[in-house]
Amino acid sequence: MTSESTSPPVVPPLHSPKSPVWPTFPFHREGSRVWERGGVPPRDLPSPLPTKRTRTYSATARASAGPMFKGVCKQFSRSQGHGFITPENGSEDIFVHVSDIEGEYVPVEGDEVTYKMCPIPPKNQKFQAVEVVLTQLAPHTPHETWSGQVVGS
Image (cartoon, rainbow, N blue to C red; front, side, top):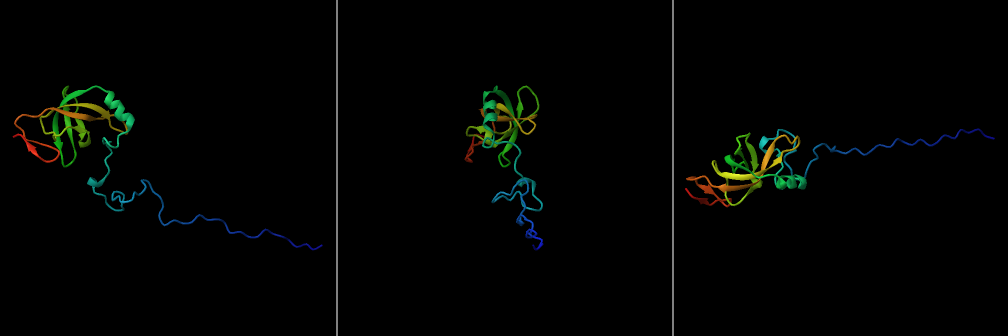
């Protein structure tokens, strides 16, 4: 009998392929300039506020079922797409996004509005106005329609 030692063949350890791009959070989205390396201008950051389009169904349903409030438009910037409403009861001003304004006119300071409130994630401690309807246009103030036509003076 020969005593040859039979050792198992040497197999190199398995390595996962090295990827030139490691996934990071947030994952890169095609066509997005927001997540490029380098300085990101503040105007290009995604909004943390839910718009009418990105709000969850449950948040929309809760807001729709809630009470209707009255207030006055304190300020609205069409170019920035948001503004603030001063509630009738005098509490803290409420944020309003352009996507939540119903009707054909751009709100201006002094317009009376009705609205419902929806909590702002992630902590749900602050609120934003949703389903905003202009009930009384401010007198002696020119108003603009969403199409750009100026009405009144």
